[in-house]
Image 1: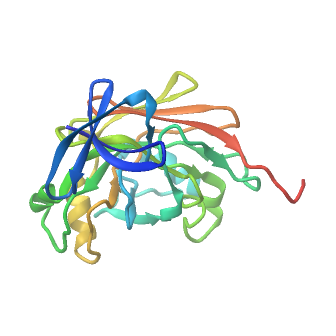
Image 2 (image 1 turned 180 degrees about the horizontal axis):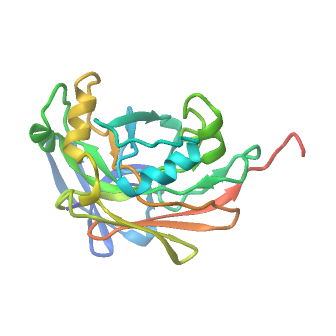
Length: 266
């Protein structure tokens, strides 16, 4: 089942995507809901980020083929495989949806990169769960882009702006509840050309293990997002680009890229 959060005229609602239509629902996507008789052509609605998370979690260095590249970015001459998940929180204000612009801050180095990922959507409150129990806490999966400014990653002590700047967490287009999470493809296209390709079966730590690890210290709540981590290498985005993250079986997250206007001049 594909569950979308959308805006139609001045109304925000959840619905189930069926072909080229979205059927409005009543109730909560996290407990019980029913489909109504109200339908809209998918082309007529504005798709929003599929949830309003309290937290957006991203694990670092979760693919072996990303380790060497990440070490180069951060200036680490001796990269080590992590012994456990290494998650951090992206700012909630970084969240944006499919079709919305990724904004390149006017003071960046020119090294804002895409990182196409699969994303778990938490469906119920979980605290101190095991990896096996974690699957019962996950509602479904969506597509995400962990947009990252490489110079800030290397120079700052934390990733607060490198990973958390406004629009640096595109997510969408909807939640798919019926997929095998450790058997998903993740494909990134930049201006129509494939530039990144990986599979979730290559994750060093599974979604269940990441959710379990976070839940030992932090309560995860319905709507929270947990990214998979990035695979391989990445390249910079430029003004005018269009970046797509596709997870077959889920959908395509598409975002144009725009340079921020510096109203102070320069």
